[in-house]
Length: 102
Image 1 (tube, rainbow, N blue to C red):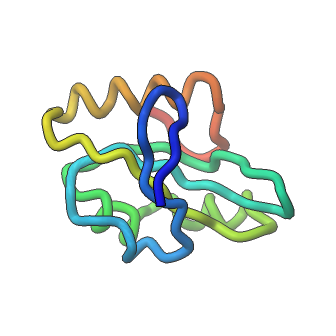
Image 2: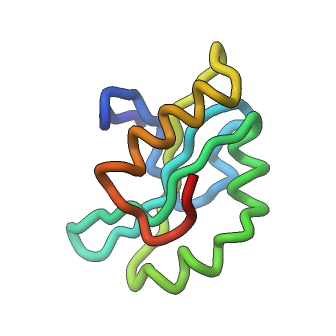
């Protein structure tokens, strides 16, 4: 399943980070409480599945979510790290996630 947000197409949202592919992209960590979705964190990696499954900020996600944590990603096969970081910042600025910073 995919959805459009912030001008990008995202895959997900998944409850299992293993559903993310081992590809480069920008990931968004969400908290869903009832019908409300909140961005917990945004990041980028050359391997989003590995990064999310081994993330140092996982405790922050859990502390800031009283509902269910979800994972989504926009894959960026044609971008290097600087391009992914630009997308990350474009998402962080309007959402002000409680975990992490660029």
